[in-house]
Length: 472
Image (tube, rainbow, N blue to C red; front, top):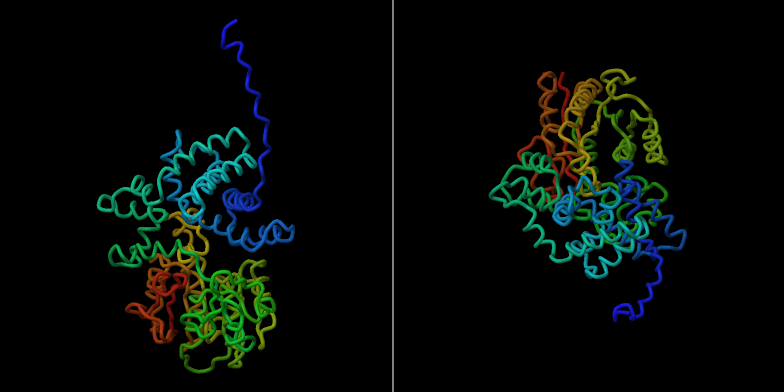
């Protein structure tokens, strides 16, 4: 008998069941919903967090970590995909999507948080064991150990082409935006490298939560009495919540007297409400009112002046959201479900008209980071005809001397100035009104007469506004 055969065999290690981490499992479930159902994280995550709290699985710190894991992973998806592609032995498209979600969560913990490397790898492998099985967990372990060999700057230097060689592709990888989005934003912004880098970086920052105190129903003084509340930058009705502020816990928000609304959206509504009109001023229209934020502010402003707002929204379920947002308004209003391109009201019925048209949403990538990966250049071909039709109908709907506000949460030139210029060429009875004086104190509004807001300049979503007066 040989020496080797006489050695006692080591006993096999007992199988250890994987330990379920509620925070990372929830983050994984949210990413799967975004990937599988084209859901939006800002709609999927809150009910998951609420259920976890109700079950006693989460506290405030757990919720904050889960939120960071989900949003951080989505914002940096393009950069992380490029890094993972360098660490796997197959094309990225051949990696199963659930495995890629676990890897992306792990890469974000390694490169985008302060979690120690060993803890990030260990937690990600344990998550893989829970949701993928032991076999694929080994693959996750091997990939993440390769990623852990360098930091984010080191990896970017490896996977991003030099700026001098391909500026747009460099920025796309470094700042995690599709190349066509980088190109479109750069065209809209103009200028050199510094401005576009600041804009793309701002898209990857967590936005502040901004509240609106609806006139006649709440005041900024009331909201400023809440913990972590500070004044807004530009809107007299805005209050910002610093990190950790929970809007759902504020009484005025619970009662609908205040709401969550980006300051850019508030400024659009205020500019339309404050532009001078010739003659009567009693009938206002929000022609694309869903989900109701701007309509609620306009209705409150109209009530203060004895005017009435008609809020129209094509989709019935979104019209229901508008009705909920306007419930309790101090003055009269009406909400209807109607197609803004074939409206039931008579031409020339209104003194002020707002159309915040459907768009690509490239101005709100801070809030909906997954949208950058879903949109395609061809989407512009679908939105363009609708945007022009809605603007034409809005001009038809306003009386002579009245004003239309054309707004969109996109800075893409094909959705902003191109639409306005095309429609106004066919409508000689209109003229553009300078919107800049209607946003007092707001800097860097450009040459006018239209206005483009920017996240990196104004701290708002990239809202666009053109004011159009009907002259004949």
